[in-house]
Amino acid sequence: MKRSGLVLALAGVAGVGFFWVTDPTIGLGGRWMTNENVVDVSREAIFPTFVGLAGSIIVLFIGIWLATRRQA
Image (tube, rainbow, N blue to C red):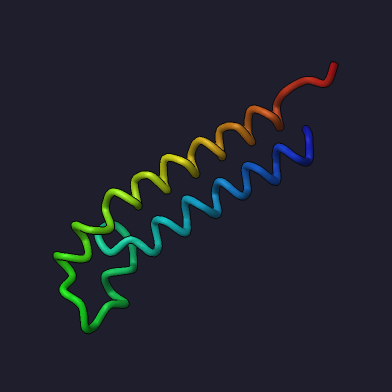
C-alpha cells in the first residue's frame, strides 16, 4: 500500500464529511441556522453540495486506486 494513496483517500473522506455536515438539507447545517429561511438556503446550497460531494468521492476513489496499485 502506498502512503500517498492513503492520504488522498483520507482527504476524500474528509471532503465528503465536510460537505455532508455543512449542507442544510441532508446534513447538520439546517440545525445551526437560526435567522435564515431554511427552505431558501437549502435550494441555494444543493448544487454546490452535490458538486463538492462528487469531487470528494472522485478524490476518494483515486486515492483508493493509488493505494491498491502495484509498484513496477
